[in-house]
Amino acid sequence: MAIEPEKIKILREITSAGMLDCKKALEECDGDIEKATEELRKKGIIKAVKKMDRTATEGRLFSYIHHNGKIGVLIELNCETDFVAKNEIFMDLGKNISMQIAASAPQYIRPEEVPAEAIEKEREIQIATLREEGKPDNVIEKIMEGKIKKFVSEISLITQSYVKDPKVTIDDIIKESISRLGENISVGRFIRYSL
Image 1 (tube, helix red, strand yellow):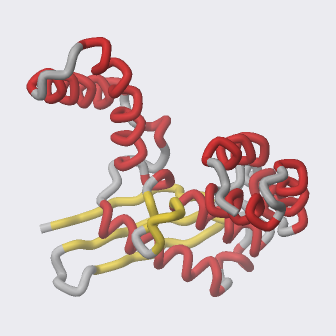
Image 2 (cartoon, one colour):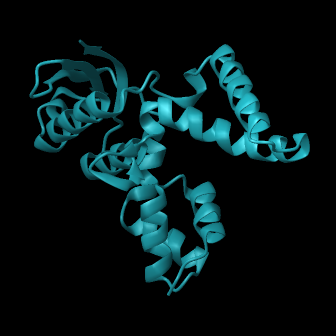
Image 3 (spheres, rainbow, N blue to C red):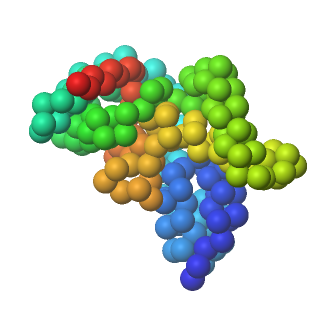
């Protein structure tokens, strides 16, 4: 059964679960949003979202040096206890996010961290490009919302498509790890070096 994108969007708004989790739940429940919500609760995915409000003061640093020696990443990944910080699931998550940063070069952790000036500059560039293509102003305004949303998601780590599985975001893989480990996990900060 093909699931309508609108239903996935509604389930995401209700549960804050990842897009792929919502789609799977809807497929398993023949498109029934109430049953899909229950399914997500059974799997612990909704609990993971609730845990994201808790403070994560423990964790570890992860590093990644690309095989050519020209890109390096250092990331702080936080959790609630040192027990989880030593867990293999947490370690794998840290390594995967480090590789994501090396491959995708995000500039910010979250979309809300992107400065208004950067968004305005991108808006000006996109408007100029669309005008150059001969698009009328009323069409440009409709197109701009999507272009700006895409720009912000591409430069923000947690909203980037995961390089190993472009169907999910970094936020989705973090939520999956929260669900599996039972603790909040968050990216504290990162730095990416390149020659």
